[in-house]
Length: 86
Image 1 (cartoon, rainbow, N blue to C red):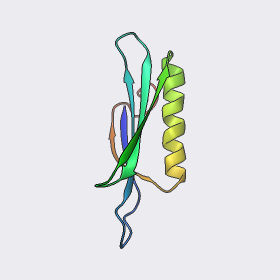
Image 2 (cartoon, rainbow, N blue to C red; image 1 turned 90 degrees about the vertical axis):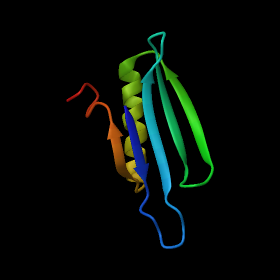
Image 3 (cartoon, rainbow, N blue to C red; image 1 turned 90 degrees about the horizontal axis):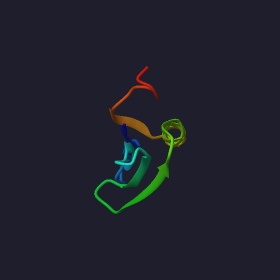
Image 4 (cartoon, helix red, strand yellow; image 1 turned 180 degrees about the vertical axis):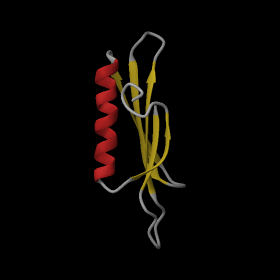
């Protein structure tokens, strides 16, 4: 699953973005990547490991909800609609 969220661009500043990606690794675990920064500028990447899919999906949804609450808008979504394709 992957989400790309962005702030509404202001008049003088570049928009900020957050990209949240959830991937299964080769050993059956799950990795949650959170990349954030300013369009055209530096970015930071954080990685979290999870053993269970439910735990990883909950972390993905929590990260998504936190960014939406901060005013970010979903610009691109890829993957399942809900935690189990609902």
